[in-house]
Every structure is written in C-alpha cells, then in structure tokens.
Length: 216
Image: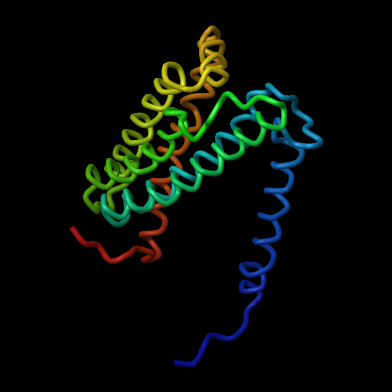
C-alpha cells in the first residue's frame, strides 16, 4: 500500500505538538513545581501542587485507567503495576536522597506504606475500571466506572497518607486536614478530574477506532 502524501498536518503532529509539550513540561517543572529552581507560585500554592504533583499522579493512574476502560481489567491492572512501580521507586528514591542530603538517615521511604500504595492504587484503578465497564463504549458507563475507580483509590491513598506514612509525610497529612477544604482540594480534585478526563478521552478514541483487541 502506498503511503499517504506528506501534509501540513503531519508537520503539526510530528514537530509542533511535541515541541509544545516539551515547553509545557519544562515550564511546569522549573517555574510551577514548588521545588523548582525558579518557582513563581510559592512552595505551598494549591494550584502549583495540583499542576505538578497532582498531574504526575494523574498520569501514573491515568494510563491503567484508560486501558482498563478500553481493553479489560487485566490490561488495566498490569499497566498499573508497571506505572505504579516506576512511580514508587522514583518517589521513594527521591525522598531517600533528599533526606540523606540533609543529614537525616532515619527514614527509608521504600518501606513507607503510603508510598507503596501508589503502586497498589495504580493496579486497582485499572482493574476496578475494567471490571465495572466490561469493554462498554457507552460514555455514561465509562464515566461511572472511571469516577468510581478514581474516587476509591483517592480515599485509600488519603487514608494511607494520614495513618500509615512515615513521620514527615504523616505530620504533613495531619496538618493538611486541619484545613478541610484545602485537604479535600489536594486529595480529591485531581482524582475527580482524572475520573472525568480519562473516560472522555477513551470515548474520543472509540470514535477513531483506537481500541486494543479485547480479551475477557
């Protein structure tokens, strides 16, 4: 089959959009990230936390969620194991290094149960969504499955952070819940957004036939 002729749209898809994504990620990492070199919104700004840490967690949970909706619960769970495992190792290693650089060696974040549950929640969000949706292309069913899975994992993670995380993180979580509106915003708004955006994206993908082969 002869390939399609080169079009201006190919240039936009292949070069312009990736460059925009690179610039956006750079700006988020350097200027919006609360720990960025030139953070402009402040270290405790709610918007900056959601756009960086919240966005990263949305990516980790979003991949297994969309595979669970479009493929099946096993694909969602397997993708969650990979994405969650990478995030767990990277986050635990980051905080171990951070505290070691400050001369604090009493904490091992690889043993932090709340951090380990980023892996667990990535697995179950895909599994729950796949189990509830059963490959349906109905937007209402995908939305219900996505929101349900996202909110369940958000509640589990909030519980782990408050009760079973290592002392530095646990104290931060306890202090956060002294301001209930702020805590609800940080803990649940990214998950609600995830539960809304991913089913919408999945529905759009079905319009264009971008769906894996299903196995049950």
